[in-house]
Length: 294
Image 1 (cartoon, rainbow, N blue to C red):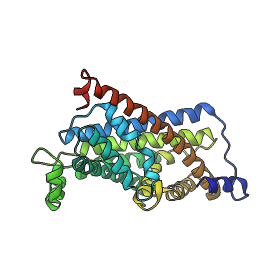
Image 2 (cartoon, one colour; image 1 turned 90 degrees about the horizontal axis):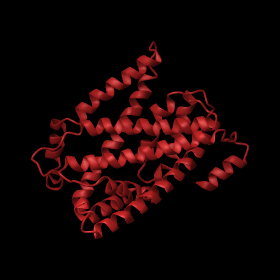
Image 3 (spheres, rainbow, N blue to C red; image 1 turned 60 degrees about the vertical axis):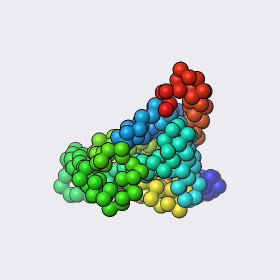
Image 4 (cartoon, helix red, strand yellow; image 1 turned 120 degrees about the horizontal axis):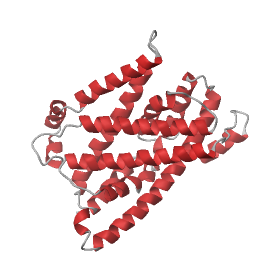
């Protein structure tokens, strides 16, 4: 991937991407880490809904430390690595895997629906931009209520009996309407990070990164055999940038530059997770703090 990026910038295929604002790219990276921190909070909230209490520092290590494993072909290693960390913190591996599956599906479905609704709304003629945004928000509210309702989830549970054995301590599947809303908010923050990145290279794409970057990311997620969605996400990002009147060739260059910036943020997140995990190990050995991690 990096060889392709180098070739792209040294050839005449596309214009070169130039950084024009260091403060903006720093702001983009901070917002990116904020989104990762929100994802850790989401995981903690999801575990609580299934009767499992975990400290926030442990959820941070469970989200941040395995973050680079998504670049291993198959992507199942991200789930396996996270479930392994949860098992170390006292959550049985099988149950952790099932809850993580629900967590990942909630994130992916909310991001895909968000992006798809935005794409649909912004193609409707005769609507102002404010009306299009309102239409997206109202549709997301209705879909979150429907997909997160107990009736819908209990129906899924009745079709997959294994879920009842692994997941809830209670009789009914917990409602996921609130996690769906939290997930959408998390995607909005990630879109904002990409907006700041584009502004740092002197590109104003308006609302498009906020509305369509979740769709681009999750198209890469559902491309299971592609490590980290490499290429799939960049193609989708370049495509939505054309809606903002950016040429496809320049959009591809921006998408590759955005991947390199985003990967750098993931490396930073990995080291934060590594440090947090080591700190948690020290606290586990301290009898005064052991109960906090159980």
